[in-house]
Amino acid sequence: MLGNTKAIQKHYWDFLKDSRWNRDKIKMPKYAILEAVIQDDPDFDDLAVLNKQIEDGLVRVSKEIIASLNLIAQK
Image (cartoon, rainbow, N blue to C red; front, side, top):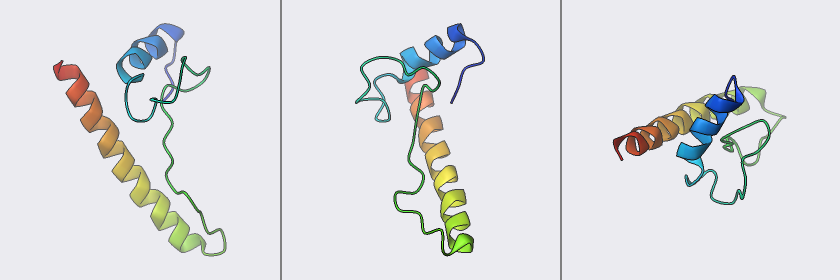
């Protein structure tokens, strides 16, 4: 996720800095406020399978991020 402006990026960083995706970050990264691994060990020899793994991973991680944002917003 990347904010269009530094202020937006800082706003979301404040929400997400303690999330599981940023626990190891000491300060806000320059270009991203959240990074998630979609596929740990991609097999580029089978692109059809890799494509499906990426699609499934994106859906899964997106749902996790949205759920985290919803929990944070309730606080």
